[in-house]
Image 1 (cartoon, rainbow, N blue to C red):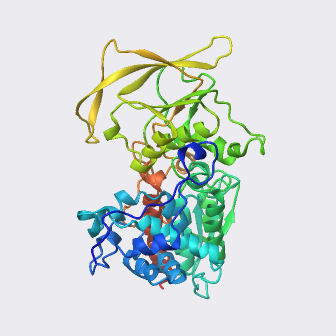
Image 2 (tube, rainbow, N blue to C red):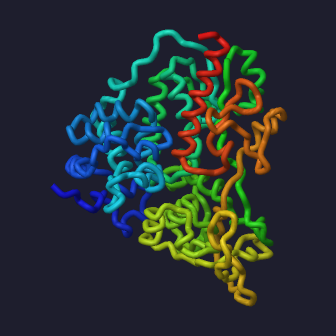
Image 3 (cartoon, rainbow, N blue to C red):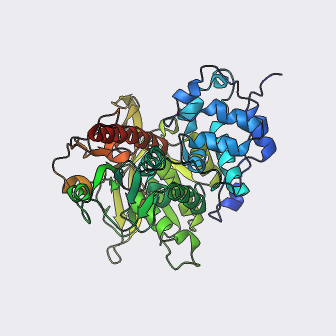
Length: 469
């Protein structure tokens, strides 16, 4: 029987409906859809898709179990290497990872691996079998370890260490766990209820999570070793926003995307007026940047009531780093693109100190720069003004500096990132490991999870060697 050349589509809310709510846009596969998509997998003897997965999920094995309608077993198979399948199925850029390597994708569309992973995780959740399916743990604990930060790197490292037999404690600086998964990704892409279930699974593995503790400040890292912890993993993320560097960016109504999305997510502004924490944005919003964070900020703005939302990006649509799916979703919802355009100045009202407009300049593409993309070159005399009530800077973030500042012996890169051994996450300080955005700068959720997994192996080897195990 010939393979269907196209992926099985997922149902979505219509653009007209979804811009009025924060409910999940993609509705996920029904069982018939999942079975149809699972049938497209070739069950390769040398599965390149697994090589493309930073956490090495046995993809053919779990898809085979889906095809056999053994959904609980499929969930167990995924969780052998990935404790957050419902998260990954929703926000992982599979098109750049596992699906990029899929053999079916050589001539047709690749198998919808992420969609099937989401289906399996959701099927397990809806069946009520998550607790029953919890991985059995070793009886005796090997040693105590600390995870600083509960983002994707920290959660993955914690889950892997718990399954290896360690007594794991996560310290989270904010009051809510999840890091960028909670404060950076909108409800319509990753519902908080789904995230809570994934985090609760780690608790079932015995992971202790303590909020409102900033490792390095509340508790210095040397003190943790004195308390009997054998190793520390730093997964504090990239919490230092980059700004535009233009006049007027200190006006009221100019946000970093980090602050903007945190206000919406952690302060539940998406539930206003149910929760009394609105974000004042006016009717016109400009988001500078074109990554996934920029798309999230733009799409949130529409749902918060903005009438006009613009993406201002200095290159063309072809160079936009956001996922193609997110770009298309944004355009379908009414986000307008000001391409080959860069901000020159943010303009404001002298009396109120608030944003009123943004002065921009047109660009043309020149020779490729260090990133391999063609460099934007301003066109003299092409400036024009866009009237705006709010400007959001979504041009990237740098590693969180708070922990490195508290521990001078940690070697840092020129961008403030903690230098680590890429193979095992080891830092310049014995017993201290790091991974995710604090080591690489802002990257993807799955890349951070891969770093957390490598660090867990490194910490296990380090502790065992010291204990002669």
